[in-house]
Image (tube, rainbow, N blue to C red; front, side):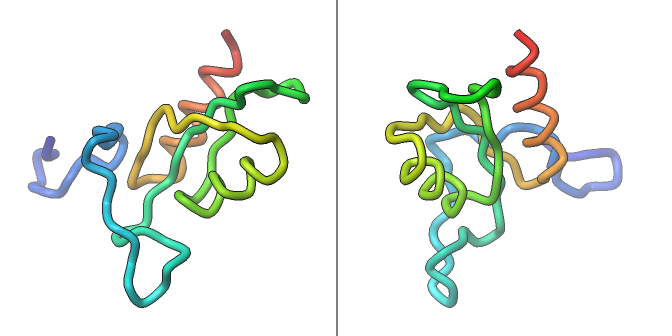
Length: 90
């Protein structure tokens, strides 16, 4: 969805079936850069939902916690941070 100024609304979640492709110049990131919100399968800490640069953060969480699930994806880091915080409040 576009804002009134014609730019994309980066605060809205990206449909998970439309995840951007991995950047061929830097295989660690998507192009454009995206930020994921992840649910830990077995939370060992107070926060069950974490966020970070996708897919780098997902790999880090899988190494540390095992299975994780991508629950939302954003072009904007602040939106991912807010979504994770909201999910952790519940």
